[in-house]
Length: 467
Image (cartoon, rainbow, N blue to C red; front, side, top):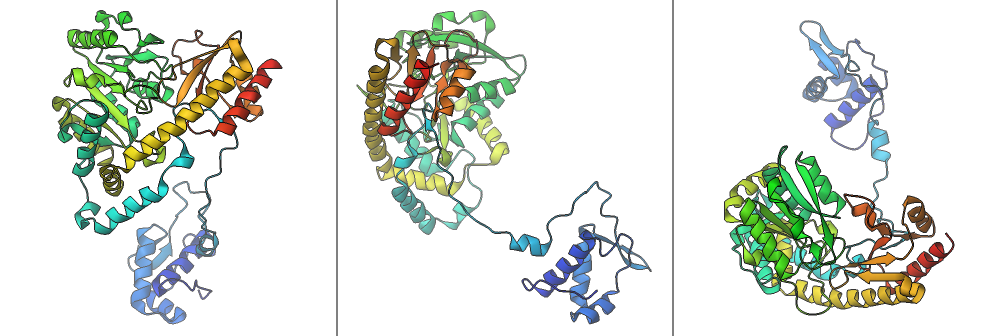
């Protein structure tokens, strides 16, 4: 039974690894009787209590079994269908542990509604995080309120009053793991097989997937350059909710005018449904004041969903929703069963970042950055396509719509553009009812430099010219 033992770890861990590896490698065959604890302790120069502990561990894990009056034997550990053993202790310990930087996207990527990762204020964000970690009460390291930390909920309520013009109690704010989780929680509460949700068409694919996964009927309603065509809504379907992006329709960029907003609110009151207002990136508006939220008109029918993914960075995974008082308790219960709560320290850091005015300053700076990129994209499209392209939906947000006369962006053409190092996003890929937007691209300008924009549009023109 003697053999080389790993130098790392306690004596117990070394002997355990030696026996386990020999069992897995077949040197100790199934059914073989192991030495008594007294004999093995003498053979390996270890106390008998160490060997007893090792045998008990191996028995607990199913590698060996004790037989009363007969001793300890290698168990039939393969009977569970196990085919190949895990890495031995030596092999596992020799594997390099590296933390490589994520590779830079090799494409010029016109992804819509995606922020600039190169301009994230990481130094200031990291400082806020460190300061919170240093002074945080130890209680923060336990389980917190599923609805979110009080500090962040207060800051969100203040932000919404300042930028969106509506008041809400911090108690109505629920912090989520991004807007994606907010929509998932709402789907679990409001939707089920047999129920219906109305959604804009086209819309974001991941949002459609959330609604479809609920088993509910999804009723697509078309949009135009002003957003949802509210007159297309039918009372007869009696939906549980209407999903809308009124401040910057995704992906066409329309701003829902007040007349349609009031018509939609009246429809919700008449049919008893909720309005889910997704405000994902309208803080980046390039002329005039920020667009006010629908929620200011009806706090009991409108559920407001927001995110910090566009204001800061997507990996932060912090979003929120402002819900009617009647929905707070059931949504918090669903949130608790989903993941209990968003990690506490990032919440505290974000609250501090906001309270110090850092978020306001970053958004103001990025408006200037995005405005320049937006202008560069519009100028490049005019330069290379002239009157053959029409643009729209660029009053706010991080993308615009470009309609190319006489072009059909099918899979083959999109792939040909990709082969030249440019990623573009056909509007048709976001459509529920296909066949109406084949000449349109949704071009994001948030995470591309001005030089990349110029090179990308020039490449696009070259591909279309030679197709």
